Image (cartoon, rainbow, N blue to C red; front, side, top):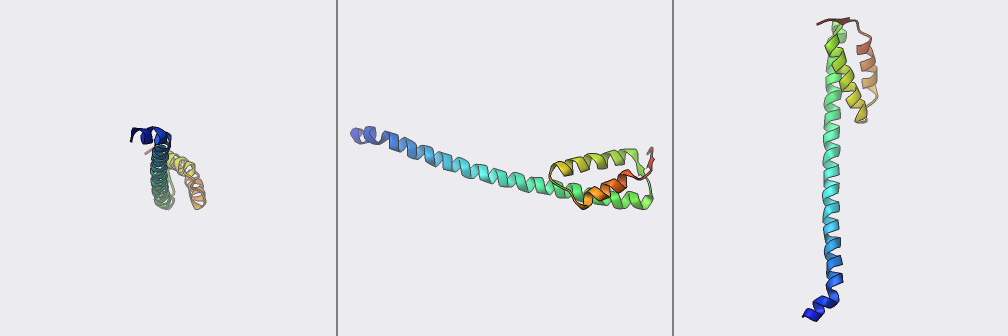
Length: 102
């Protein structure tokens, strides 16, 4: 028995290493998928809030400075997460609104 173990120890160790690497790979893929879902969810929430703020402040014809700064920060995060398209146009319209102090 000991002779068998000594003779095949390297093979056993390599098999165990490959199994562990396979488990690690599956866990990494699962985590990457989870992060992708979280990123997309955050991007969607930012997009929704920018659209809501656009409707609110364009209807009023003015925007508080703090809200304009908030829109800019949300847009930068949205853009960093890969968002683009219609939101860029909406943010431009928000930034062109006259500002008020509060």
